[in-house]
Image (cartoon, rainbow, N blue to C red):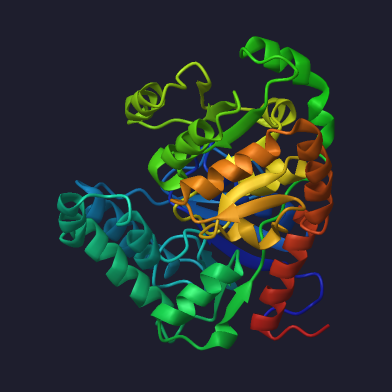
Length: 383
């Protein structure tokens, strides 16, 4: 066991791959950047990793055919690799049964399937229930949470903590809520400096209410509900969609069918989303299920009020009517009503100021300190 002296803690972080627009990957990168400034020696174990930072990388990329083989092969290969190396703690961001800590950044898969079944037809739900991939994930999820060797689970919201306790046999004292951190200097209301230019570029004048949606994987993130909410508001509101999805034409057709195709703008993946936060009036994110999306924190830090769902962990920081509003992801009348409220640009600005204040304690250094304290507690380091 390491001492509290000069010897660094050796921590391995497991994540299959790095995608620049991925929320989970951004969390891992930010956490590692903050942890690397402490007395911690970090190693990333991944299939591929294009992130940068002062850490070592162990590539673990077994060949595979199919989704189940991809997940299972990586899990088995990582567990074999760990036997060849010595770490004080292994923190996995994947459903791998050989870590000391599991960060449940993807939430509870069983709950995601429940929520998804609400928007799928009978045939898709039947196919989902018989999917080999989903059966594998559910089995792997239970193996991780109910592994007696697991020392701790990190959740990024109380919502996920409650879901884990409802679905699995795991001592409650093993579960720790550590909220995502946000770079409060980078995501700041100063991003409004490009507001006029961005609005002119994307067809909105200063008086046009603009709702912003950010996220790839439109079904899960609730884009259909966002489009319907804007249509139901009937206030000439524009919706900017930043992100990608192979089924984008389906959402374009929905906008046309609702008669708001000129108000919904698909802007693709953006390397820097800050100018879009700065140009919008509010953040509209009625996700079907998301443990705690970074984009909600980023939007609030940039001074945007948030409309989100009660299955979004970020709702825990929304004060109803003060810095945003929360509704069921499929409650279109309530979502439309919230859009109407925030189409009032002055009210949106006032609520946005409160939103910024609400997340001032969630900086990255605070998150890192909580992680370090958890590591120390698990290792019995008291000084």
